[in-house]
Image (cartoon, rainbow, N blue to C red; front, side):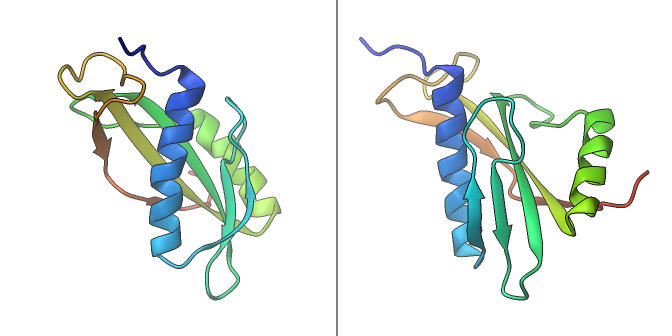
Length: 125
């Protein structure tokens, strides 16, 4: 019997999904951080050498999609501006294939909720 993926394993899975999306869009990785509660997960550059901080957040699949805390994001934008970087947010909802309300299971198919990369304005609101 398979066990549910741990929080770290869910983040790793989500990072693989987002990493492939970034690669397909031509981004080059400068740094990768898969540690829980440490942001950003990716530092990358585009073909114009513009730096991006990419935040990957996982959660259960839901009607609204995976969102971020707006207050926290404002402080993160300050960090990005200081480093001449733009911010990309990627929310990944994960669930078991047969019951999306439960976490995905190890070595089993899973359900995915991914609305792509969201480019955030780094100016303060």
